[in-house]
Length: 202
Image 1 (cartoon, rainbow, N blue to C red):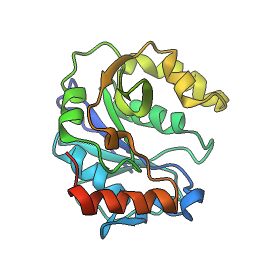
Image 2: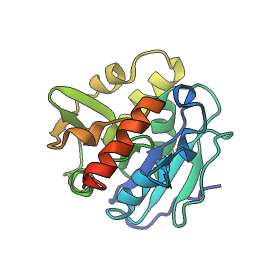
Image 3: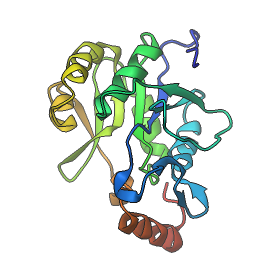
């Protein structure tokens, strides 16, 4: 069981959200390999270059690869909605901001995570690219917890609608692959091609 640390409370904790079923990729998404490494490891390793404290937030039955130095926070088994993981992370952070990244976003840049981690406190900040907001790459302040808890109870509204109601600040990312999600075998093949062409972006 994860025991959040009380020191350096003003620093964010990084939370890699891995609570989805991954049905479209055949299940076990966190352990699917990209270029010989578990998909989850890509985002976790990048977050670890920015923040000392990195958590993986997953369902009780989610199979996870072994990631040294990364803690595991088990979110409630129900409901299946990304906001449940957000709420679990903010509650465990006990008043600290949470820097969130989805487990299936392997190409997030160190500079983007650093910018989010160093953002002045007070407002939710979400990554965006060409008008597309990515609610699972951002910095959530403790003040967002109440609204997210209410959304988690319903677990029905689209996540972009939920976080849009927070009035987030938007951080434009320059590289189009940063917001690329690996959801299907075709996505994984495309990710493999990206790695082959340019190495690990960021």
